[in-house]
Amino acid sequence: MQTASGAEVTARAAAIGPCAAIPAEHMDFIRQTLDRVGDKWSLLIIAVLESGPLRYTDLQRQVPGISQRMLSLTLRQLQQDGLITRTAYAEVPPRVEYTLAPLGRGLHEIVTSLIGWAADHHDEIRANRERAATAGP
Image (cartoon, rainbow, N blue to C red):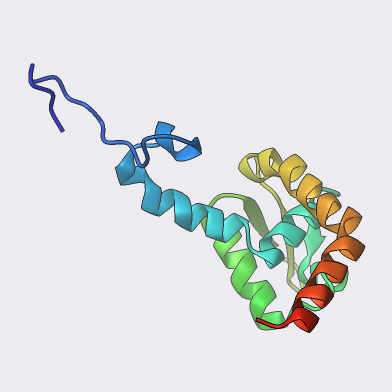
């Protein structure tokens, strides 16, 4: 976009609010990134990996309820985004460890705060859901 004087102006995603500082052409990618790091499995994996490198089976034990397929998919996606690193050791039997990359460590405090908030408000949210379910549409 150009002004009347010919100067380049970057279109913003929104006129006001938190998206106002974001160029419109970045919004699709930002939404994809938020979707990736904001899903329940990614949040829990990032939180668990703060303690140091873990093997696949250790991750599966520390993230209750995650299926093998979902763990594999989430680890692959987090690795593609540079949030975790995967190290394969040439041993018999083969050993693979996952650890937070520097980019993932930057998310850790945010993730643990969000998980803590959910845990602190568990009872209140459950009561609200039950109240809404009995009230009907």
